[in-house]
Image (tube, rainbow, N blue to C red; front, side):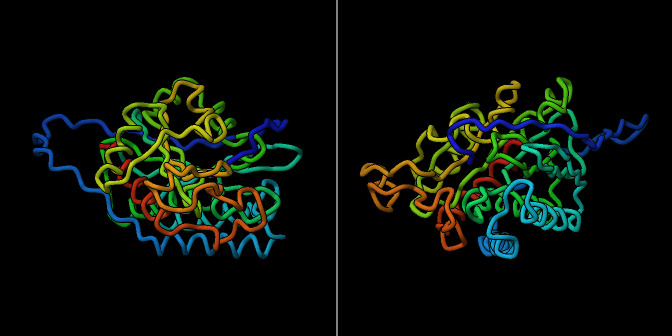
Amino acid sequence: MKLPFPWRATAAGAVAVATLVAGGSVAGAAPAAEPTAAAAAPDIPIANVKAHLTQLQSIATANGGNRAHGRAGYLASLNYVKAKLDAAGFTTTVQRFTASGRTGYNLIADWPGGDPNQVVMAGSHLDSVSSGPGINDNGSGSAAVLETALAVARSGHQPAKHLRFAWWGAEELGLVGSRYYVSSLGSANLAKISGYLNFDMIGSPNPGYFVYDDDPVIEQTFKDYYAGLGIPTEIETEGDGRSDHAPFKNAGVPVGGLFSGADYRKTSTQAAKWGGTAGQPFDRCYHSSCDTTANINDTALNRNSDAIAYAMWELSQ
């Protein structure tokens, strides 16, 4: 999640957008089969999500201790995610931009099929701050979104709507990558996005369970999932306007997401219902060198990863 004050950054570059063509009907074809029950979302293996985090940690360690915009660690992180998606059958597009004098990259992955005029999109920022490896902020969201995408491929999921996944660059410099993507789409393509779901910090070590309250349908989808687990949620306020959903929301796209907390301190009421330590930050290593693989709460990461899959399956039917 970006710092709570704006950074000056400019974005420029070329974008390659994959064009999806919907097939037409065939005259004289047999009537369509009766619709079958919607497939249930799979359980997302926490071991797989943590394996991605281990890889991101190794990348940071090998590249000066971070995965920040314009640094070798960021590009290596993007190449890791892209290779997984390419092997799984996604159509990937790398979008390049410039911010603060350095080249940045977004990664977009489209799953073949579904109505191209109704796109359900999940995204997370892939960059860290320069002071640390960024495993909770935001390796956690990036790894969970990646594993959800790979679960789509493993299951052969073919929902009615088109699925798209994204990993943003330079979020920590002021949402630069996601702003650039949104500005590159144009009004017609923006109108095709029926929902954008954002995941920024979902494995905080002293976690809360926060749900964005921007779009009521998306919000209720996440609340329903957590109600099924018997876990109370709260409306997310700490990160309002500070992560990559903001450019989409400002462009009129319905948005939602999950968050487990950053440097705000957990109250005694929150500790009573969620566990953890009252009076301590949700993430004491926020934007610090100690944001490593040791800075993750496995239970929160597991629950939020499963919630991502649940929402993507539910909202894309």
